[in-house]
Image 1: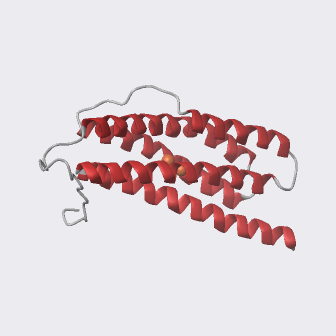
Image 2 (image 1 turned 90 degrees about the vertical axis):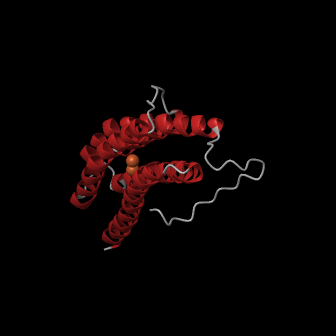
Length: 179
Ligand SMILES: [Fe+2]
Ligand SMILES: [Fe+2]
C-alpha cells in the first residue's frame, strides 16, 4: 500500500499534511449514500434470488448477497477508522434502481425472459456501485486515507467480479434459449 502512486496535486497549498475538509465531508456524504444503497440491496437481493429460474443465477446472487452484507460492514469500518460516523439518509438512485427492478420482475413473472431481466437489473445496480466506489476510492487516495483505499478496493473487486459473473450467466442463458 505504501508505494501506491498517490497524486497529491495541491498547487495552491504546500502543506501536504492538510486534508481538504470540504472533500473530506463530500467523501463522508458519499459513503453514507453507499451505506444506504448497500442496506437497500440486502433487502432487495433476496427477492431476485426467489424470482430467478436458473440455479446458476440464484447461486450467484446468493453469494453476492453475502458479499453485500460485508460491504455494509466495510463502510462502517471505514467511517470508524476515520473517527466519523455515517448518517442515515436514503440513496435515491438505488431506491430508483430497485423500484424499476421490482416493476420489471412483476412484469416478467412466468416469462422465459425473467432471468435475462434479473441480470439486466442486477448489472445496472453493479455499475452504479462500481462508479460510486471508484469515485470514493479516488478521493480516499487523494486524501491519503490508505486503510480506506484498501477496504474500498476489496469491495470494488467484488462488485466487478459480480458484474462479470452476471455477464457470463447472461451468455449461458442466451445460449440455452437458442438451443
Ligand atoms: Fe456492494
Ligand atoms: Fe454489488
